[in-house]
Length: 391
Image 1 (tube, helix red, strand yellow):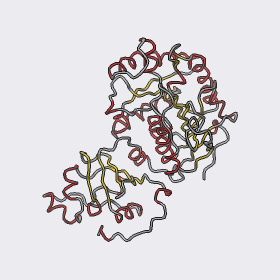
Image 2 (cartoon, one colour):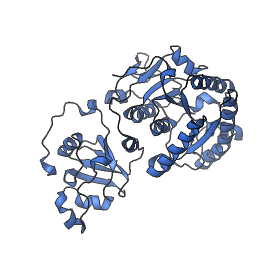
Image 3 (cartoon, one colour):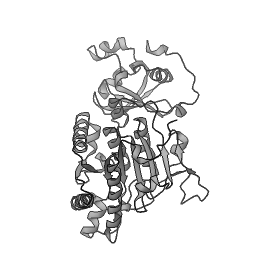
Image 4 (cartoon, one colour):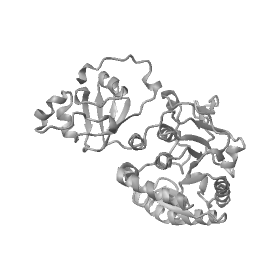
């Protein structure tokens, strides 16, 4: 297993995610002293040759404070209005705090589509890469002024993981109100044990995730584990640590408690990293045991192994592949629209032309467009079965 590097200064590119509660106090507004301290940490990393990107929550929390909106849940239009005000204020504060160390900040506002659609993903990546090349620190947030419930990340943990994979970062740091991963939520179970190193995100690790602990936070440990799956599969290590103290990045180097998630020893390629990291697959293909075996052997998914098709997707959309018991095993780009997929599911590839009226692809998902998303631990000790259904 890859071991944690001794110092943050040994990483090449680090993405830092900062939660709302760390930046904004409901009554007092922005926590200026904390922001200036984290900017000092960033400047110190930059001086050691580390490129730094920041995924910063806090726009809605800051905006609602400026606008004097009441505590509790906000309506969609209130959240969007708060974001519109908060984004300006947040970007200004980041710019001013970083400029104390002669560092230029660049604001990037992303929507779900900017990372889910391949062309927009590449465009966003190019913009961020150019900012880094010019020596700026990208300050990234979800564009909450236009995001709705149906088309949003919903949390900045997974957004940060997508940014980390998009930019080829080798470390993702999630600064939170908890200092790492425990065997159970520590505020509910005093006997919960702290886990300093996580070699692989197994079903047992996923079961340890608890819920959100703060009204300012939309993501709990569950979203952090989801972020870890996205990041580590792309070869990016991840740290979860408390951001409550001043200078939390310096704190990591000084020995502050944190959980370190090991990167995959065999990260997927750039294109497959994008496929695996999709947050909202457009549909689901349920496959039989023979198809599972074929996929693990590096083969394409043929129609004969598909038992059910759900969702409304188009050719080229990202879809999830699940086994008969409902566990996701892979994701890939659909070779057919949903209606056509339903017509050919369960049939041999040689029957496609008769069923559809034209000679389509032989594969429902070609192996070049497919990435396995399950871990070895999820597969367990399943026996290899001959794939006679996919001749």
